[in-house]
Image (cartoon, rainbow, N blue to C red; front, side):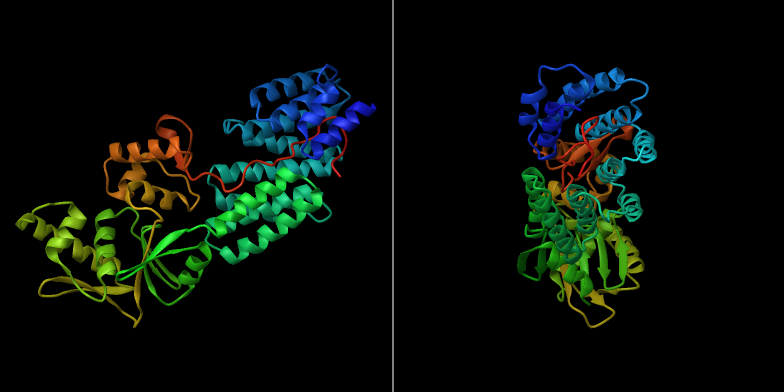
Length: 406
């Protein structure tokens, strides 16, 4: 391996793609093509990067199996960085197995972490968590340890485990600093800011307070009865009752919780649940039916008692009632709150959860998509919407045909 290739590889490992290109930009031998591809990927030129990596893989000889495997793995990672999720998962797994067989454990671990990132992008949190549990990062390069802890932190945040996420972010940042890659440190710090940003609004009667994820975690561990407008559920410690698919029942539950310990007049409930300006006998009959259904749904946690004017929420245990609402009002805020759980949603499912028309959900999603607040995977009927990842794709890509990762 000549000195220019080695110097270019070291520049890429340090997150300096321009420094690498200065050394190999005019060369067309396989190692140089591979390094140029990685440099272009780090600069965001994903299509050019994939072409260079494919060319490098074809140019390496049949005996250079390790170099070819590294090129194929790097191309898979670039596809993921470009959000091309059509790249088959089994290709990543095959690349990782090839690298393990050829003794390149560091890059094999890197490919496994890329697979975890793919699962996170697809909203498959449980599968990502299981994949991380199978990985052993003892003795791994600091950059890979940073990515490993970063992925664990994102899963913890999606599951509202703020204290655990805080610890994992600290580990990731320490590893990123040890790796000496400024872009990776910046990526960790950017994700870390999610802990200090407002995650929801806490409504107690007339009081409205913006709260962080750590405060939400503490609230979930408390004995309070929570009407969770972020997850469309009613919950208390150890009990979770989802009303995601029953928007009318949830609208009534939220109205009762916001007024607690007072009752809510029937006309106000009709306006809130059915969006009716003038209540008539048909609305009143329907309200009685829906309140009966809500009583059945909330039976493990609370009752819904009739009063002379309307209805009041009556917790079974002596506990305060609060409402956890999205950070912003309206359909857009509700959509963002639902997506923050990390799971993929179809447009029709979001519309059903909001109790809105599919056209209204599409308008809100279009606005959120244009602002970068949500992202879509798939097309047509298979399209699913997700919250943007808290972390990006690994900053340091593979180093095919250059030098082992240290």
